[in-house]
Length: 80
Image (cartoon, rainbow, N blue to C red):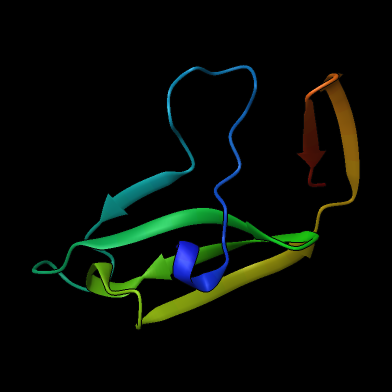
């Protein structure tokens, strides 16, 4: 994901890593990865087909419309 310039937003309310999962979306013999990814001022859902960084589909690219200051060091972006 870093090669694409993406980050994976994480909630300040959870301590575990989240917003990424694997599933056989492309067929029963595939291991595809899906992630909520942010880049610049927008977020989108990205499917990495069969886990390959050169085979992706981006869905629902939307701007991050607001920010909430959690503390002096963290800002949480909201998507409506």
